[in-house]
Image (tube, rainbow, N blue to C red; front, side, top):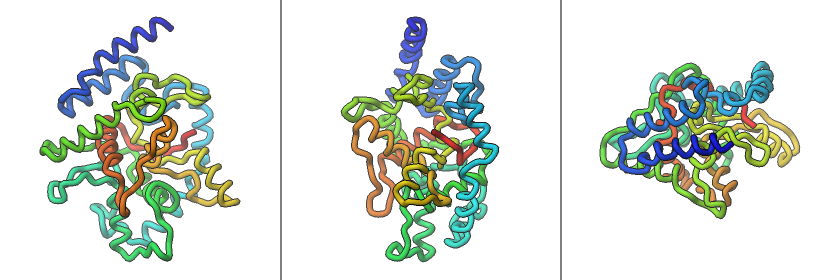
Length: 294
């Protein structure tokens, strides 16, 4: 145990410069090297499997579940809604096989665009009536549509470009700061659980590595599925689905910090910045979402 702590401490010293004004390319190199040194037997693509790359027993259980994945019905239902809301009209390539290119910075709007952000804008543009239908960021039908779009990108490597403009870099650095900053009553940062202590146990759960996190979102979580089914009294095709920003909110709750909610129909800019940085850190890892998670 002492050797592990010493090794982790050494790695932390190597990661410390990331909090300074390092370039995104330098950040990415240091981020990957940290995980490669901590887990010498794993290759880059292995991290797309999260905790199942770290624990053989959990991996065997996960592989059995993936033979008859619980999200299949949701994928089909998400595809139907994709067609209903004419989502393909709003995106390049008809919205198929594009997840790996998000988030991206648009110099015209001077904003970072996420897939879910563009998806919501598209649906509203195509006549969605919020008074008659419920469609919220993060879960349910909306996450089901995003899950279908992600499914069409399986096997494509994450390829996020960090625009070098001043505004884009400000958003990127905001996201990096959020990732490493302490928050909540427990005074934890994203990095505390998913970098420095990945592979360790927390309340019976194995902490996942941050490298590869974004490659499998939206995910289908058993915890979310049970909670939704219990609340409704029945199960549905979209139970269990959730986007990466839904998970950010859940993580904030777990460290006893207030989760950040969408504002006026738009994703919270703090989480958008975090997703920009967080996804870039997984560049090169192939998309395998939606995936089953605990």
